[in-house]
Length: 256
Length: 154
Image 1 (tube, chains in turn blue, cyan):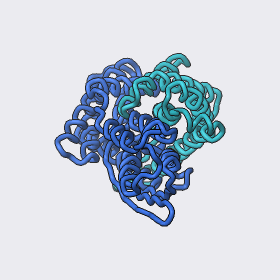
Image 2 (image 1 turned 180 degrees about the vertical axis):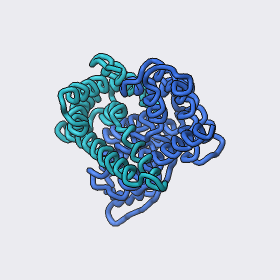
Image 3 (image 1 turned 30 degrees about the vertical axis):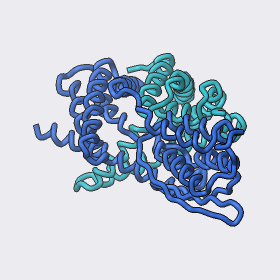
Image 4 (image 1 turned 120 degrees about the vertical axis):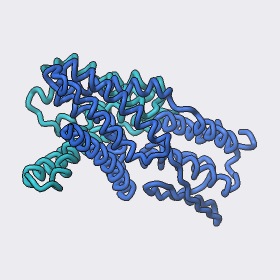
């Protein structure tokens, strides 16, 4: 065991690391069950007791050792990130097994945080192909699939650009849904294929926040009701935005 | 337009991998997500073809997805939910969710309140039941195989 991995680390420094770690895990879309498991695993290694309160947007952690205790609240914003969840879980095991000391773990956490996400062009194309496949699962024909592919491509690009330009993510979702639905009306307007309705209906489904919905129910089963309700409401809010975008598209096309 | 079981499996797998890409998955896990999603979606397709409802069908399919995700998580060296959640995405009742919102928006108009309210409540119940049963379906294997589930990234 090297000196930095000694369990008797300064409690305040440990708090910094633990709060940072758990807040990033929460914002990456991790379930509360996994956050608790990972943090407790590392706390045991450092010989501290850990009490956590997982709130909708932040985490409060209290570490205690002997008569000493320290509480910290941490907040982080990022999108769902499975790479981060996987890497942070691996990191927790390395710490728990004594392969990484506190300093190395902090460096490792910083490296995970700074890791770039997948190439945006690849992600956009992947989402478009996925949504076109989704259209087929709802029994759409080739024309419907083609227009859903184009609608997703357009909507996804606009959503990303809008978020980068500083628009609220809900407004960005509404604009993207509206644009996607308008593009997907192609088969209707030009009389192409036999399933134009499927194209319109599935064109916005790439915006449905599937992971937050699943996480909300997962937290509910795990007894984290506040976090669960928050995630559920946030997911419903996004769904409402995409529904409104669709209604708006319908209104625009009817006007013309 | 008809859909065969093979189309369902292939398109289910492709949809899962594509939607997973939005959530920045580890590259190694994408293939596993596709395999699991294809099998899960195929299961639901067969069950629904034989008259099973969407809620029960989604539950059984997600249970299968959950078992496969836990078993493959060690090989992929990632938490089971990083495989099972993307695999569930093509089964998220998105169509019901947005019809629910459409119904709600329709209720605010002056015409056809009753019809829109029925649309809203029906789709609300289906959406929530399907997601809840899906999550229960993937959670049971995690607890049945606790040792593998929480040591996959070891």
